Image (cartoon, rainbow, N blue to C red; front, side, top):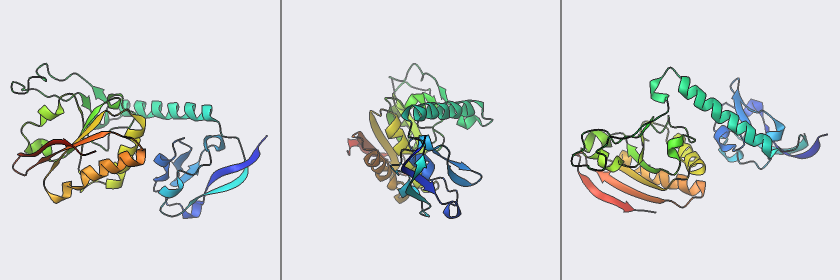
Length: 243
């Protein structure tokens, strides 16, 4: 028997299907179906409204109506199913750039002066392609890298030793999408530290602030370091703690 309780309602004619509410719902109760956000099951919605602030059209509100009781065990099962499907889709995708891989770096990774092979230990590396639940993110030391850095800095793989690389460019990509992704990573993975490598050019300067803001939103305390690279490939600042 259903009882009256607070629950999310989505006003369909106001929803444009942007999907910003989907990652904001930690229970996975909202999905985009036929171009509109939908509450897929009443029992998955806790009625707290974490998704409200993400909607640019104010299409989401909290109402009180008869609804199935919130079921935390059903949420856990639902989230496990979502993660399983995501991993399966990534594994079976026809695009090699989105296929998760883990492998050992070269044997000389601890000898940077002699190193001639890659120190990379995982795939993919693009921020947009790495899912927050990727196993290589757990207890990781992140190396958040502006796209131009590995081309400009000859010794990039010295920084990469023992770290998980995440590459991107907020100038050409959606910075808010990056923010959401880092919030999810910080919430789902026990990150040990973050080193941010970026170029001295103005368009790179927003990357550290974006990562710091994501950590604040996620409510975690993590050491964040930075390394600035000149357009000639020189290391202008060593990795100093900034948080």
